Length: 219
Image 1 (cartoon, rainbow, N blue to C red):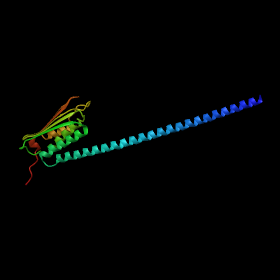
Image 2 (image 1 turned 120 degrees about the horizontal axis):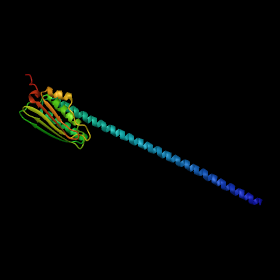
Image 3 (image 1 turned 45 degrees about the vertical axis):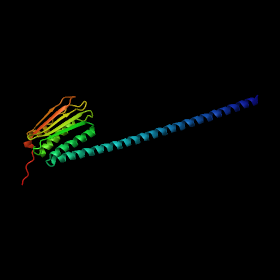
Image 4 (image 1 turned 90 degrees about the vertical axis):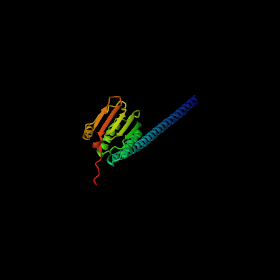
């Protein structure tokens, strides 16, 4: 009987030891699994942070390139507006501005120009007024689904800019600024704007050529 009890106790001890070792093994396995999951989460967070940083660098680069293009376009337009009195300068500068705007915002632009060979050269003040009006138009037309139709006409008596511009979706209608209106009136011209929410705006600028001509050079 004693031998049987000893054998039974030894069996219990072996079984208990085996269960204890199995529990320790499971605990170690659970700890190792948690460490692996924690490491995986850390690596995923680092990859996400690296991806966001790369995106930020790419976005910054795109913004920088866009600003450089805008500055180049503004310098070209300002140079043409202040430069020599050539019809080609005004027409080509308007074309460059429209091309830059179309590339940046995906707007469909159409440009037409008509020039009377006998027309006087356009003066600096008139060129600046034309570019100021075009700047206001472009500021209200940045929807890629919009159309922009610009017509420039230089005649014997009148310099005219006519613009049909599609408004951005959900934007407020374009408005004339007091400064721009005064600038045009000072040249003896007329600036009109017809605009309504959700509908294309129509800009019409008319300047008398006698007020826009460059002064004759002094011999």
